[in-house]
Image 1 (cartoon, rainbow, N blue to C red):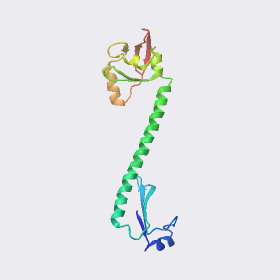
Image 2 (cartoon, rainbow, N blue to C red):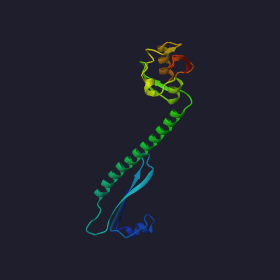
Image 3 (cartoon, rainbow, N blue to C red):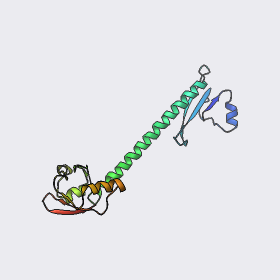
Length: 178
């Protein structure tokens, strides 16, 4: 909770151990905690006055409490963004450096993602060159009906044990297992 130390109650707060004087004494001191959404403290926002003509009022405390909640949410949002960025970097590194060919297509057969291993395995010089293909139209022969594949993804969230053949750039066939 917020703490307002005024010149009138400063000595009482100091003797009870709630506050400690560091630096020049102020007329008023207002501290409002920065808390996570779970209520865990992460810091404090403080304002001080050093002249008796300027005093901190109850409305100032309410404003600072509001501002502290906004600042805490911004800090948490920034931390979350940084964690997401780090996670994306780890995924990208794993994906790019995997020794297994990985890819993703649209339901219409458009290749929208393929890692360097798959590109090389199929004999292409770049993802862009590979992505010019449409698996729905050519170079891809499954041992199952496309409808079955979609049903498995919808039911289980993944497909395991299905085999199909991809035509490589040099027109030879490579057999792939999902």
